[in-house]
Image (cartoon, one colour):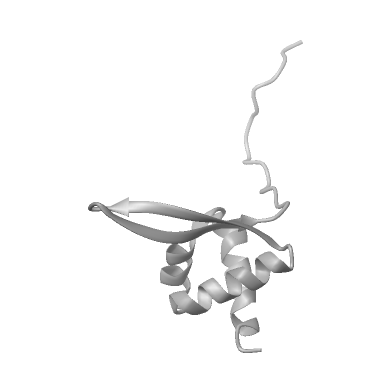
Length: 87
């Protein structure tokens, strides 16, 4: 399947940058938007990402998009001191 070659870089990009729109993924990876959308549907069907449809308005015109994030992925904690209970 031709979309399979795009799923790995898309999944890596989502792991690195978190929740993104399909158009942002396409722009950053250089993969055409339609192929990104097809790959996102495939990744969602496999349960690797969470995907939802989003309608945004740009200059009064509605724009349909997909917003995605990696399923069950929790990024590592930032380094440094954390607020907590002082003893």
